[in-house]
Length: 44
Image (cartoon, rainbow, N blue to C red; front, side, top):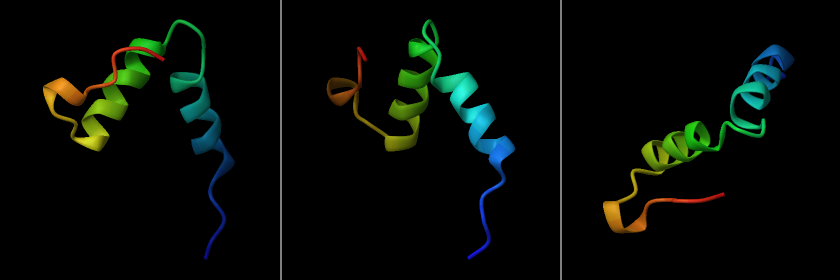
């Protein structure tokens, strides 16, 4: 199994892991997990 490119992880952390970007993270998780309206993540 090839190693993951560290630039990808860094970019992911910068986009989804910074304070203030919680709405982006919640939207990503809700979309990726295909959650129904009543199951959606509303706070982190």
